[in-house]
Amino acid sequence: MFSRNITDAVRISLSIPQFAEDLFQLTDRNRIFLRQWLPWLDRTRSAEDTRSFLRQQLQRFSNGEALTVTIFYKEAMAGVAGFNSIDQINGIGYVGYWLGEEFNGKGIMTAVVRDLISIGREFYALQKIDIRCATDNRRSRAIPERLAFMHEGTLRRAEKLYEKWHDHEVYAQLLEPNSEHGAPPNGGPGTQPANSKTTGGAAIGELIV
Ligand SMILES: CC(C)(COP(=O)(O)OP(=O)(O)OC[C@H]1O[C@@H](n2cnc3c(N)ncnc32)[C@H](O)[C@@H]1OP(=O)(O)O)[C@@H](O)C(=O)NCCC(=O)NCCS
Image 1 (cartoon, protein in one colour):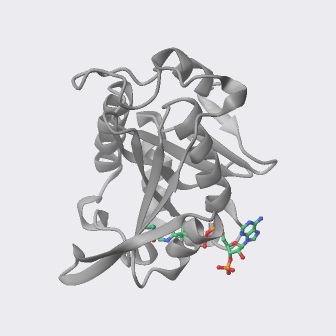
Image 2 (cartoon, protein in one colour):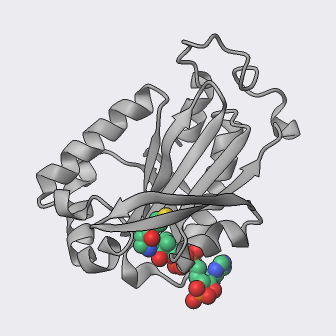
C-alpha cells in the first residue's frame, strides 16, 4: 500500500513513521558516507529522531508542502527522495535525495527522479523541478545532467556543511502539462488564490496505489 513500482527492481513508498526503525538502521550504517553531503546526520542519533522527521514530513505532505518517499531496491530499503519543499504558489518542486552506499551505481536514483518529475507534473501540476547540488558532489550533479536538466547557475556559499562552505549548482527542468492527462488538476500554477492549499488533491489518491 501507499507505493508504486518504478522498475522491476525499484519501488517507492510514501514515507511513514512505521519505517523509522529500518530507515534509522540504513542511515546509521551509512553515516560516514552520507555525512559528506547531508547536514542532518549529527541530529539523527536514534530511531526516535527518524520517527519524528517522518511524522513531520507526513504532516507537510498532507498540507501539500512536501513529498517524502522511501526507496526500496529488490524489497530492501535503499534510501529516500522527494520534494523537500513544494512552492504551491509558483508551482515549483525542490528535489532532494540520498541512497545507502551499497545501492549506488545501479541507476536507482535517476529512475526515481524521473518518476518524481512525472509526479510533479501529473499530481501537483508543477511547472518547474529544481535540483541543487554542492559543486563538488559529482554523483549528485550527474543525476540532473543525465536527465537533461538545464544548469541555471551557481549559488556561492549556499550551504555551510560541518564548518565548510559549499557553492550550489542549480539545475532545473520546466514542465508542460501532460496532454494525455488534460489540464492540470488545479488549473495550473498561478491560478490558485495566494493562500490556497490546493495541490490537485483529488489526484493525490491516484498517486497512492
Ligand atoms: C547522490 C546519489 C543519490 C547518487 O547515487 P548514484 O548511484 O550515483 O545515482 P543513480 O542511482 O542514479 O545511479 C547512477 C550510477 O549508476 C549507473 N547506472 C547503472 N545502470 C543505470 C541506468 N539504468 N540508468 C542510469 N544509470 C545507471 C550509472 O553509470 C552511474 O554510475 P557511475 O557514476 O559509476 O557512472 C548518492 O551518491 C548519494 O546518496 N550520495 C550521498 C547523499 C547526497 O549527496 N545527496 C544529494 C545531495 S544534493
